[in-house]
Structure formats: C-alpha cells, structure tokens
Image (cartoon, rainbow, N blue to C red; front, side):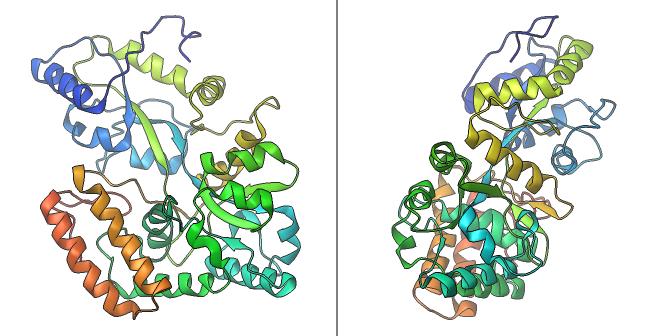
Length: 375
C-alpha cells in the first residue's frame, strides 16, 4: 500500500494496548516519532483530545457518513476514514422474480423484505429466506447494528422503547417466512450454494465462497431500511494525526495518498477491507470483492444510511453484551414470549452491564458523559 508514496513511510503494526500506551506517552511528552495513526474507530475515541484537526484536508471523495463518524462528536475532523468491512445481503437471482412490485433490491425496506420472503415461500412451498441463527452465526450483530438502528436510531439507550418493540415484531413476522433450519446456520454461503435458501444476511467473508464459486448466480445488496434509516454495522478504520507528530505536512500528504482511489484499491487487495471513497473496481478483482463491493458502496452511500458501530468500551463484558440481544431473540422469536415483558427484563440486565463497564454511548446513540443510559 505504501510503495507508491514518494516521500516514503514505514508501517509499524501493533496490538491495541501497546499502541494506545505509546501514543499517549508521545502526546504527554509533546513530541514523538509517530507521524500518522491507523486504527478502528473505537480506538480513536480515547485519544480524541490528542488528535489534530484535519478539517482543512480535501475529503470530497470520501463517504460523508463515515466522515461524520470521524469527527468523534466534535466540530473537528479527528480522523479521515480509511477502509471498511461490513455485513450485507445476498440473493440467488432466482429470487428476483418474486420481488414485490416496484421494489428496488438495492434500496429495500424491511416490509418489502418480509413481502419478498412470503412471495418466495408461496411460490416454492418452502421458506427461502435464511438467517445465521446457529451457534456460530453472527445474529447478535444483525440485531445490534441493523435492526435496532433501523427502527430506534439506537443500539443501547432505546433498547426497551416502543420502537424496539415494533422492530422485534417485524423480525417475528420475517421469521415466519425464514427457513426453520436457520437455527443451525452459521456461514450462509453454504446454504446459498445448496439453494436451501435464496436470500440471506451475513458478513462479506461468510458469503465469499458462494460469490466466488457461482458469481453469475448471485447478487449482493444492502440491508433493508426501517423507520429510522438503513441501519448497518460498518467496521470503520480511520487515519489520524497525533498533535505530537514530527511532520504535520508530511502526515497530511500520506493521508491524501492513502485516500486516492488507486491506493484504496491496493488496500483492498492487501487487506480485504473495502474503499471508503467512490471507486470503480478493476475487472480482475475476485467476484466476491466485486459483488460485495457494489452492495457496500450502495449501503454506506445511501441517503438514509444509519451506521451502528461495533460496541466500544465494554472490555471483557462484550460477550455479556452480545448475550442480551441473543437471549432476547431466543425468548421473543424462538420462545414466543411477550415482547414487552422480555425487553423490560433484558433492559435491566443491559443497564447493569453498561454501568459496570462504564462505557459511554457510541453511534447511533447520542454521546454520553457517563455510562450509556438504558431508558
């Protein structure tokens, strides 16, 4: 990725703990050797006060949704988006003839997805929507980053809200047209290839085999939209400059280089993380990259895009946080328990967990001074 940067730059990889410790030490000293920082969105939050304002940089080609995230709730551009990964939808082209009238597969709503799933079931005699609800499936990320932001504009604060109740009832409706074996599904590429399901949700890496083996049979498309936008969970990587940098202008030149379309494509080849700028992918990219890339670009660039970020600040409580959403799914959808009673019960668990972790809110929830509140 760096070979074309004429001024030269040395990449130094690091685990997050030592990375933060070193950056903080250089910031405290007021000078250092690190010129540019690259890391996940969440890693920048604790360093916000020590990041230079990059508002004067040309970001005209960078995804506007991610640019806003890069402000870290301030009026300054604390980091420039660098690359992304995420979860998308996939469909066998056989399913397209059953789309609801007037529906655009690249801009679906949850109501249209439900109607589409019903149409497929009616036409084939079996439920053709698949969901990774198995033990190793990524179902918790769907509820956290897709369903909740799409109906509540929240992941934590409005966990037990009337809007959340609506969201779970919508998913119950979708589940009635979902392949009943989904509780055993983990990597949806397998069921897409066997045609046990025709439409599915999963991480791009867990759809890749289907796209690569039979690229002419499948499409990738964005997640649906609900009442508060098109919720999706990007794994956003940014590049920022510590105020202790030894060369501010050189740092900005490197960031500009990494943001160029050709460098973004080189980054994709090297890391399998997708561009955050509008680029046309070369024809020699693997089919999975091309199919996923089109879906990601449409989803993150949509007017109603509403990103729900990976949880931040939970430490070793991350597993318990995920369990709140999985347990809610199992009780509401699989167990048929009353939605309101389950949400009230699980909200108490979530509230205690957030207070124990002391974790402030992250997008799409409004920033908080203390632990993210559960209303």
